[in-house]
Image (tube, rainbow, N blue to C red):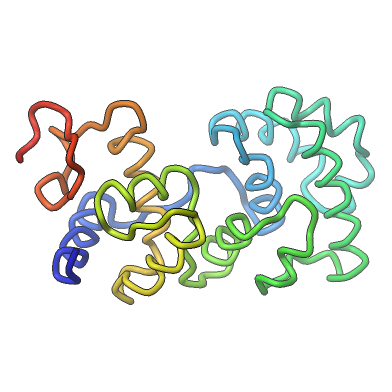
Length: 214
């Protein structure tokens, strides 16, 4: 795929959603961090339902520590892998207090030092909370990038590096959100909505669903 086509793809996605953002509910960087940790292998809807009850009770590192693992599990038990996530969140809150003055760190290395925080989560925090032009690659973005030909790769890291290299600068800040929303609602895993896709004529996917242009 050439750069002119990439530019057109992003321009159309921007026209469709001028100001994209995460669908996770949060009011500060700590709430976003906890929500992203919880969202691993879970839907944003399920996370928002849980945090709507959790955050009024505890939305600071100290508040989470005071809640403790057992009580925290009670708030997030509807979310997949809640046992491990509760343990990681409490450990993360302790590190935030001991090492970062209770604040969410602003570098990738520091973020990835927190339990339950991998590269994808760190990229989300850097982009959404701190305005860095990072591109987090989840299953949706991995699928969209490979299907469309936007940035092909065998691993999320390969796709991330290609997206970072090939995405025009003017689109980098919002690229993550455009691609995840496109994958979530249009370029779906089982049956993509090709007939209504705004980039279907530019997409290099060979198995488009009926009704889409060739």
